[in-house]
Image 1 (tube, rainbow, N blue to C red):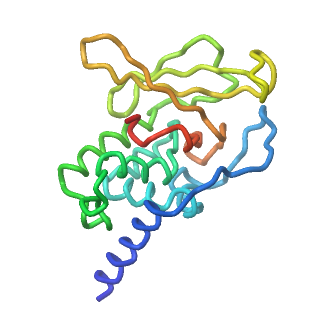
Image 2 (cartoon, helix red, strand yellow; image 1 turned 90 degrees about the horizontal axis):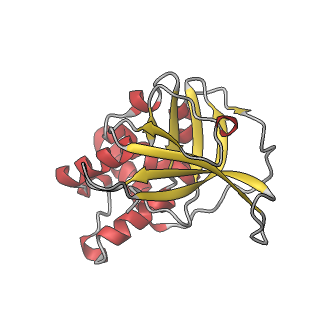
Length: 211
């Protein structure tokens, strides 16, 4: 009975994560201050079910909790809204779209797992203070080339004025071919967990998996 209830609750979480709207965290944070979370990366994500409930469940289903919580790692956290849009894009027909976690096929879960690995940078804590306007490169847990840089502008579009933002880009080119990068802006940077660093990605311009 407990297992059935647990599965049912998981299905409710998934449906909620894929159907309701999610909003930016809001508030103002000192751009040069590292916020100490005092908990592991996974525990932080789980503490924000309004933003990451579907994400944390998929990480657990994929068996990637230890990779996300690895010491000295960086996790670039896509919001549930980005995952919701992934399923909408992949399954335009709502009748064919997974309604619960149990509806996700093994083949689809392999794709999701590969996508999740691209949000993990193992063995390196990437902080805004260590980046520049020029590109720096790292490798994701999946083995994909990732690129980071800083952009600065204000609400009027003036370059080199206003807030500084991290841009996270992933190479979506074919292996051995030309590098083709797709990018997303970091919405909240430099969250320092007990095992590494978390950056929250903007959801309004990003679809999970860089699709």
